Structure formats: C-alpha cells, structure tokens
Length: 177
Picture 1: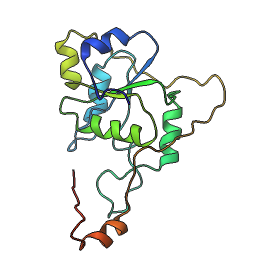
Picture 2: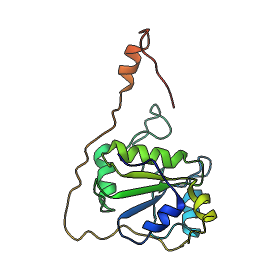
Picture 3: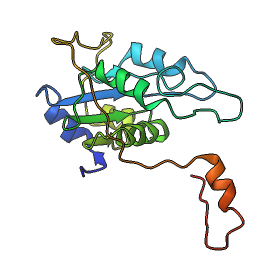
Picture 4: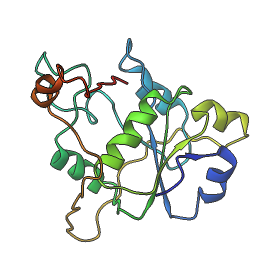
C-alpha cells in the first residue's frame, strides 16, 4: 500500500518524471461549475480535471444519495482514457478540505489502483509551496494501442438491503462517514 498523503514539495519533484498522473477534483456542492472554472483559471501543470457531478457518480435514482457510486466498469473506462495502470502513481487534489479528493482516492482504491495519494493541503498548499500553475486544458492522451483496463476491486461495498437486515442485531454497528 502506498502512503496516503503527498506533500506539495514531494509532488514538485515528480511533476515532470512521467510516473505520476494528477487529477484536479475541485468542486463546490452549491455551484457545480466552480471546480471546472477554477481548473480553467489555474491548475497544477499536467493535471486532468475530473467532474464530480458528471464523471465520478453513478446514475441518480432519487433514493441513492447525492453522489452514488459509479458503475465499476464505466469508471474503469474513464480511467483507461488516462492510461492508468494499477502501478502508476496517482495524485488527487481539491480546494483544501480534501472532501472530494478523499472520495476520489476511495473510488480509485475501490477500483484496484494501489498507488493513490492525496495532495496534503490541496490546491492551497501547492500555491503556498511556490508550485507553478498552468491554465492549459489537459486532455487525456491518445492511446497508442487498443487496450482494456481490468479493474480489480479492493474495497468492499455493502448493499442497502444487507444493512437494513442487520440493523436490529446488537453486534452490528453502522458508521456513516
């Protein structure tokens, strides 16, 4: 397992080595366009923007929450666009509180990516460390060959029916984080 956090200084050392994929997942729950707008104004060089409302969620049914899990295969196809491999270092960051970065970290770990880190302190820490910024739109690379990314889920999920069936058991504790 990789370390959970990476400092801005450490990320600066890996920025142009080609071994790291960076995702900007800045997001505002009240203004869904703000994250993309912030990305277009400035982001870490080479970082790709992932949209928490369009790309990192599943189909909403009205009963499965604000940000339901995406379909695992659809998520794998999305990640394949970025030529990820389970071994590649992946760094995610958001505005500062790491709420969306933590969720994206979990999604990537759930899909089987092992070397996933959150930028400690997020975008603000990057700026405070003197990190350079860029405003160019980063598009996923054009695949050199037709390949299929096979995800191997590492994190377990539990269906709501299984939770409901256990709620009256004295040895069962549900923690909603």
